[in-house]
Image 1 (cartoon, rainbow, N blue to C red):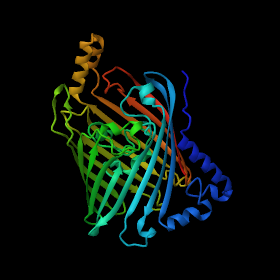
Image 2 (cartoon, rainbow, N blue to C red; image 1 turned 30 degrees about the vertical axis):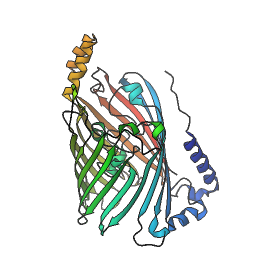
Image 3 (tube, helix red, strand yellow; image 1 turned 180 degrees about the vertical axis):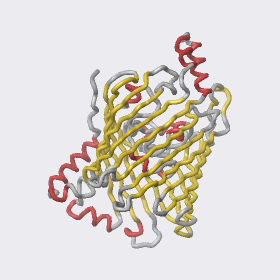
Image 4 (cartoon, rainbow, N blue to C red; image 1 turned 90 degrees about the vertical axis):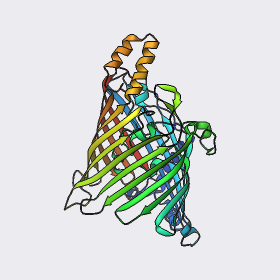
Length: 431
């Protein structure tokens, strides 16, 4: 089977060409130690930051191939380029309470190993989906009455601030990376790079406890339509989603963070198995935990984290019924590699029994009795194990090989698919 590698988009090509030109000007001794690939631009980058303008850019590629199982063998490549600017209006206008403006543009290209080769629900590559250039954030943030009460309004992805933990970026599979997929897979919840209009409000009671809530527009038509990439006022709104998240952060010798969340989506959607009846809305909840369980006395960057996730969704409308996950992340596994990390995670995604019943009924109606009989005995959950090692080659370059095992990959399609072994590598460059 031939593997097709997609050409760089104009945005990605322009950024990489510009990056290469800047690199040539950098001295070799600074190149491997600087924070970004393109460096300080002769001091211009630092000067801009001092003046209130912080520019950022990131390139991520994920190449994954099926070693065994799935629906077919092969390899697929996907990439993401993200550029952004943060405007500190306090510095720009010499003010004390002017706030911050954030602008982010995202571009995704490539092919999905899961869709093309494995046939599973939990995407092998995190950076697949919505393959075009889009505006991913245009927001304004400030505090209200007291610095403890902050707000943000504009166009943004709610998953940037709700339902995620940074430590989960140690994985390549989207089932683990950053957010539980059951949130966006069963409601109007939107994760990056999909953005919707909304407003957020957060109150920090003290250094340990915070309460965070928001309201976001729900518009399924903007999720994957290239024609609406820069048209945030597009029609198609079905309702609003309101998340509430209670956050506890422990700042002791072994720090940890715990999030307890609930959301309600006012969109009226058809009930599973009864297209004539619509729900009055859909709700769900989640618990996320990240706890340090060991810290080296000799090396600050060397520590061991344990994480856990649990979610529940609306039984009447959500095909993605539950998600359970747990794992370990070891930072600084070797004294000679203090910036590297090893991660292993286990996840279980449960399919709604009502959805399986609908699948079976549709197969029988189409005369596919063998498929229906096979689906009757098929597991109701897809399970995932991933082992990854992140090599922090330079401050701006990381390479993350990943080995993934997917059990019952056909659970969500009600198809018999052989358990799959997948090898992947992620390359991340801070521009």
